[in-house]
Length: 206
Image (cartoon, rainbow, N blue to C red; front, side):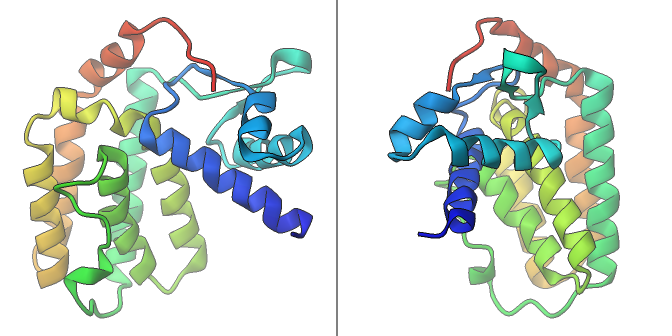
């Protein structure tokens, strides 16, 4: 396997862990443990983490401090939600036709919160003809991944709301309104979301 593909595979593995809730915001990422679990050396793991740090998905510490999952305050989290809303609305204005419900692959009923939200919102990104815009949407989605795990605790009707957004995309009706409502629900609860994350002050080790 080429080094480039190995590093990308490790990168995707780490992203999957962030979306699954294996890492809470503030957690220290254990490079050697990841390497051992994947049967590889620490070098591609560090390279993958350096890429993710460049994307703002993890934080790189100085010296021996290593990498951590970013922890955001209410204002920063609000900014991320608002930025994602703006980018999604721009992408929707530049969209192509939707073929079927199968284009949104992850089941909202069975999927983990972060994966379900990512599946629906990434669909909007995939419809734009701008690679720059699509890439930026996916980057923000990845940054928000660890916080999506907290949303069901704070937003009880998140599945219903996400189902409405998916239905809106499939029908291609009131999409902007649905995206705006999706963001509004989270902005209303952003303080509770950050408090839920901060309630567990024990940093888990990856």
